[in-house]
Length: 460
Image (tube, rainbow, N blue to C red; front, side):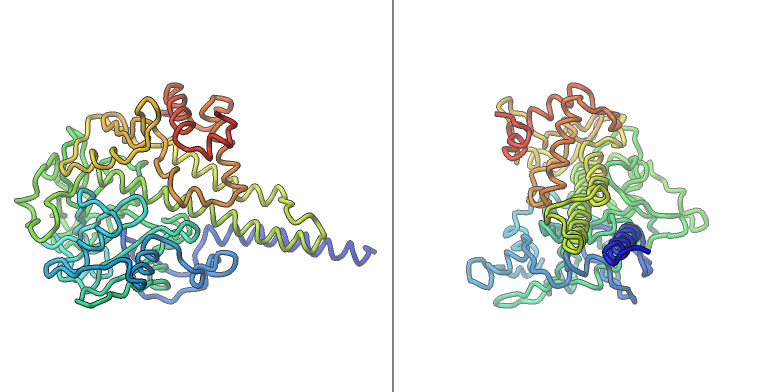
């Protein structure tokens, strides 16, 4: 017969095994139906839902205080340190973009009915999306609200709305449950996240779901991108789904992609005068697609690590182990998430370009100017746009606050793996498109522009 202590240990071991299974299952399944998943911004569809793992400690998504750019702006407004000015034509939009340092050049236009304000969206009245490294703003002509999706360094995507009505001090309202119905699924890495979608839109902007949809990132071939979006820019003989509508209801996938190609002006497709610019820049769209999934993968790595360490802490206490003990099963959970992040941030499966891409709004120039640069003038924000998106294939979001505030164990692991990959000590990661010269350049740029990483690598 086992002793009382042995019985307790057996019970705890079974509990650990159950936690491992539940954690994996909870991060790979949903107990509610998602009927529509949309581009960036707020899609607030109302459905019956079950509580999600990240709504509980240690994440506590619904109750934890937010510390994102929009929450900080709200606090500044309340303290009288910032002011939003209502514009008669565009409401709070221009002032909001100014306060959040979001460039006008980032404007992209989506005309599919893929927002909770879909009744006011159509090919004649697209929704405008503006973004920077942290925040996304959705604007609809005559819309009731401005939609806001931003990135909290620990919570991931956080959603807000601002009523499009004059006020001395507008209220920025956080949205939770309704947004999570569509912005917390396998399409967002099972965390609160951002999305860019490509659909087959009919003459009203309604997606033809029978033909399928695409979740878009830098891994997507151009031929599957931008269905339901307007696109300005040139791309040679490469095709995409932008700028066109479904004409055959029986075969919606048969789009006349040639008619939407290489457009530098949208004048014959839509009146752009109600918007802040006339562009829906192709380079901005490509950056948007890279960035949204990258944000989600950073959030997922943080969530997996915090949850795994939280469970481990309970077991350590019960078993009388050191408080900082990390078991192989626990490290395995966050290391798996870290490997997915590493693979994506190094553009390992990026869809190649066959011809040069050029935008129209000046977004590429504005984006590149943000740096930082090493002593040779190199930056991770430099574009290639002939073979691939960036000249040096490593995501600029490695400089983001969300990346910097990853839990220490997973960040240490990522930094170690990065050094192994970039110095050719470990070539197990598929290196398609990541040449020896790329690795060396990225290593040198990071060593000089990210001091924390240089210190972790033991570099001067």
